[in-house]
Length: 329
Length: 291
Image 1 (cartoon, rainbow over the protein chains, first blue to last red):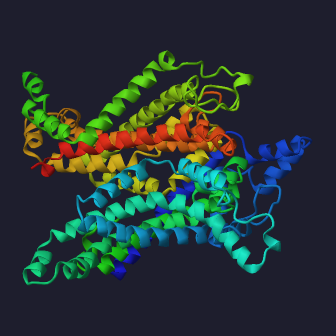
Image 2: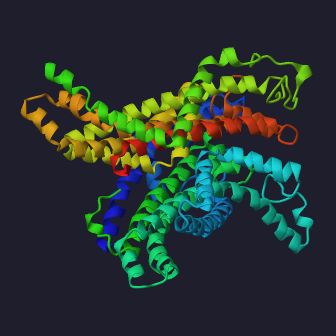
Image 3: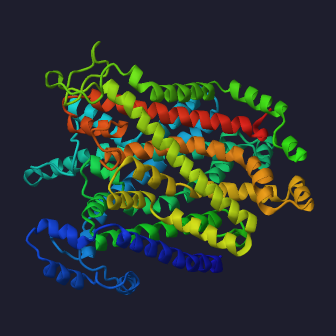
């Protein structure tokens, strides 16, 4: 088990390096370069000044040398400074956004699991009932609904027509002047719509997965045995069935890991939430390479770690799986 | 040569009838299939169906709510939303099919080569698949489009070239299992060259799961395109697409609900239809599910 974990981690290193190298080259090969974007802002910059800027950023060196230098700094956790006019350290810019995205996505993940698992169980135990059919419709529609459109719909309904909830940002303009309870409600009310919209897709997928998993478990011989020896159906389903069926569902958490910090560009853009997704969107357009590369480091590392976590947790909770026999993802 | 002509139909007609019978039983899948066909017709006939010129603006008809003259209302430039949506369907279809075409080509090529040659080649290609799968996809899409400037061609290429990994794994798995079958060994024993075995005997048999996966992929690509367009990264105005009409919907969210509701509904129906059709196809083609 431990050996497997080490092996998987070791395999991930060249993969991560590959992703970073590819991203770096992609950014460098694209037409234009960051100094030109900056020159747009300062129209009077001369050729010589631009050359100084290129030297300052090391853009005059060959790409492989730039990558090597960048990598060496990153290993020491130095991501450099943003190219944007504020020129702040990349780590600071990211650090101030992490709590927002992480908080939002943690809440969302908890809600998804807390709601989807019971829904899946109800569907499976009442297979082909009206409830199950309604859930199936919900799942299919949920998969096909664009999240940004759903966002617009709930904004129109709850924000514009009913006027119950605010439709953008995290706080009201008068937040500072509100008493404590009003402040708490202000934050909650701003979170309701983004979390609702962001949860629907995961809810549909996870409840379907739970349903399938439980249906499969119910068909197993040990369930039949448990029923045959006279246990009540209720005990069999909840004690023998659900416990085994929930295993593969829980391991999906690993696959949600990258989303926790990555954030959703679309949700954050629609609701004007200053999180990681929005930072990425802005950086991509201003060609803020240091910030982009830092975000890719985070995203790719989490994706690799999440996969390992999913596989390892699966092996831990389900002793039937022999880890050594599995190929790396 | 005579032998190869007889072998071209790898599935006997009887089996095709079984599949069709199975598919027909699934009413949702048939419904999805009908919508898919209807959407294809709408996209093809958009210029004939559209009641107005999708680009014609009229300052006296700004932001009209739905009526008999404008079924889906008008936008902030007085353009007819229904006409714009009809033309927008062409963008969705084109992006869906071309990008998945690219993904199928790349995925099939890589999966085939990996499976057939095995060993070192397989190892390298599958590691590359792992690498691409761990690349945060939306990051990749966004960065590429931001660097290349958005246009319909860039969107197609970018969605296609970042979406082939699942297909590559699928094709590889299919081929690995087909490779050991008697009919392939027979062909090899007769001295057929590698390429011939691959294209004549193995790939046609691996095609069915690829087809199902591609059908579902079209739905995914249409969703992705509309999302990118909504972020302003897709097809650029004034060319209408379902995603970029929704940008106007958001801008006028307080006053014109119809600009948001109808294009999104079109995306939802399209994606739903392709998903139902694809899943029905898969169930009908999988002999294990037959009773």
